[in-house]
Image (cartoon, rainbow, N blue to C red; front, side):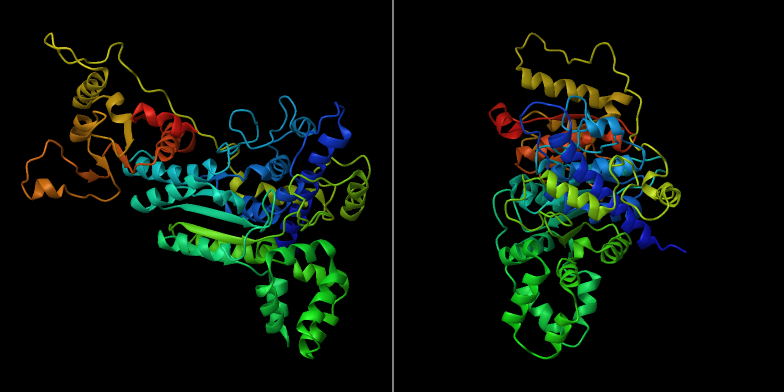
Length: 527
């Protein structure tokens, strides 16, 4: 009987081939002008194993995923294998109405959950979508639908985006749950190699904000080698090796690994025997068997994290360009395989000429078995997962307070209209959600908040009220509140509004978000 790992390995192989071929076809086969079409063969390849493990094992229909922009070819390949993407769209990758460069909710046809073209924003979107799911659940609107996880696949260089850390703070304040961030730690950015020790900074930051941190550094081949006589010396060398050197040796291959290891570790009996027992190809396979490319390690980690709802950051060591001739080279971000390299890759993957677009061209198991395995994958079991919700009835005219001949500013008028809506028990009043970055009172939301309350999963009393200190405002938090108070970070406001606005699609519940901010900060927020 074929094992689950065997099926997943075959699927990963087909995903890797289709992603690389899609980019190659757009640049070297498809008719066009002399302008480079582009694509990211190397930076998408580093996520192939992780995404295979997620989509075909760990994810459920209620989960939502923000895919690293440069991993779009892997995403499109997965959706193609699963029947949600067409060959025509793949053949027109990065062309007009073709599969998009970066996953797009509006332009792609293959069940994109979050648009991620602007790095960093899709990451934060998953955090705020988790908070919105909590809001919908606390109000009793899930209608028996299970809570999902909001998952983000993140490039390690993407972690330089400042809005990610602003979002982390907000998540801690609101008791974030059901959120996974998976860092593709391939240690190479667009222009360079990542600085040494960055994973330790990531680990400490996330732990400080209450996240579990799971580090997947070594795959099962490496762990087995470490258990052999001399294995601990090999582990020590790997963990001391610089990012730049590890990348360079990966590109150069098994013979170079052997020379460097023997030169630096020296003739020390058991560890030398460990190295010499392996051919150059076996040694290369061992040294690139990092945690992010090892299906058993990934499935075990995802299964363990699925047993609770705490936020989890997975730091997955990977190789940029994994499985490709470009693997490890510092110029591989925008680089592509040449036609000669692609021909060699085709032969190595066992794909026959003329069958490049066949779903299972790179597989060695029967296609019918692979189709049956995919059909049983939980994530795809319910078909398209994008939900809908009916519109909210809105009266022809909103209630307006009497002015008594007194001149009123537009800002004050806005607050008074919201106050009048808050008095009513209507679907409109029920589904409005307000939010503001620490300017709730000064943007005239105070009366609305007094009537409708602030949202928190657990009730928190207004201490000033409890102490009988007079105040114009009542700041009571509770699960039925309708105002989400944010810190003074305008990008968080915009991303929260986006998450609230997508609730009909993500949660099947339509909300009417209203955000307030002073106009000088709008440009800062939308930048």
